[in-house]
Length: 100
Image 1 (tube, rainbow, N blue to C red):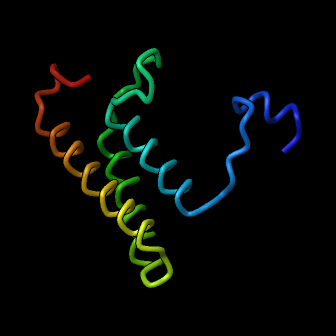
Image 2 (cartoon, rainbow, N blue to C red):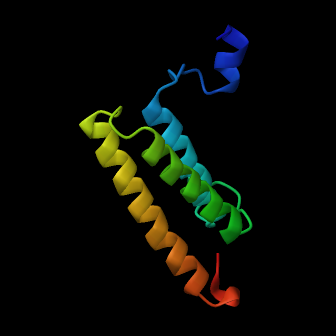
């Protein structure tokens, strides 16, 4: 990563890994569910369809990587999928006028 790229990414180089991939997908799903990643982040329009697609993508990764993950990666992936599914259900069952 060039110095210019480091400046644009906050100055830290984040190594590519399975963990960073699933965290990135989880962050994307959270945004689609209307949950900003930081308190000062602008609001994002809730899109349950794209949130579901992202969660389903994580399920595909879970299936395709079975037997190739560390126990820590497996635990993180399972926990993230579970939590995202709960948030998804809460979001779609909330009246439209009460969604973030």
